[in-house]
Length: 562
Ligand SMILES: [Ca+2]
Image (cartoon, rainbow, N blue to C red):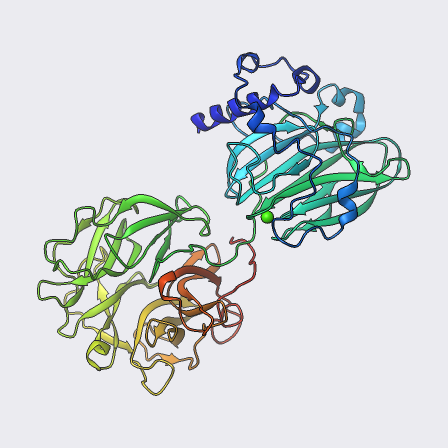
């Protein structure tokens, strides 16, 4: 954190050199570091920002909704100043309206021209804070600053507008992608969506003096534009600039803006995702079929990064055959540890279930040292379930379809450590495929939850290509009997096919189904080379059965997760 803040501060310093306006912008003593800063970066830093004669970027392909707006003359020359960020980050509370209205002159003494700008990488991580004298950004496909990525970032500007006289003012923005604006504590523009450049405006009666302003912005990818201006009977339409805007030079201390997401959440091959949420840290973890089981991590369930850790850095455990089949791992919090259940082949080359445990979700993992479940027909797709009476269970599928046999899904009670079965316990059959239905020769990839007093067993059926689907069955007791919903609850659409093999991730009171699906090709079958990407959709519990989106993977922007 400290290192990051230092980098940020230096970056701001570099910008502050550009227009030689440090004294103009910052009333407080300039930081000694400012004058010492190298100027070597400044041309690159500002080249795109100051290029104000460009038309707002058309890289999203649709151009401006209102071309007139691009012809507005611009008086304010945007410049950027060191924000004087302290080591504590953005913890300073915003000033109160009461202080401003009651004695404008006193407060103004502590204010400087411009707005306080904060940028968030991946909509979440603060990467840059600085004062900007105007919001006049035509970033195109470039980065706002070397510390800010070109795509998938958000920004917020806060401060005050100097209203010259009582009257009605029209505020306008041109934005690609989303924007929302508050003036005087009221939201006046709400265009919080991914979009090509659009112009929005809204009128507001304001009293002479200072009025609080907040602008929030989000960029997905491709072109990026944000310009913010106003007009009134006495103010010609123009950008809001240094004569209009004031800031106390401090962060508003608000959390990063939360933004919608669009599937996929991981646009690369990562089949059979086993996903979990660490309620203590708020982090999410995912592992997929294949290889040594790479452990992915995410702060928001939408942006994922390779943690750099794998479950099997040394290769397979000794009991396993050195085949390539490492399948369908799941990661679970089991009592006080993390346990990964996985499928591989035993010494007789028969699919078997193993387990490995760790004190940390990213390992290192210690293998149990022997198979946890074996079966002559092979056994795959282990899934752990903790019932609300404190009993632990493992469910798994007998891999009968490999030899034309049925595929019963069984369940057996585990000891609390999740690494052995309760003595005397027996496996109970929960579900079996019906070859005369959409399931064909397979049910598998089960995930069990208890909601509203009922047990719901999500599962996948049929061949794991474009024929794959997600179904659900329910029971009043954990051991069944389970009654099937019948039709799949998640099927194909023109963008995604074969949705299934998901995990249910519960965040606060929201269940989210995180699953894989193939990108569809033009024939409506799966795009083999693209692999199975990870998607996420909310589960609704508003009927007798759970449902998701329109019964197929969502393809439009979805609200942020809780
Ligand atoms: Ca864009």
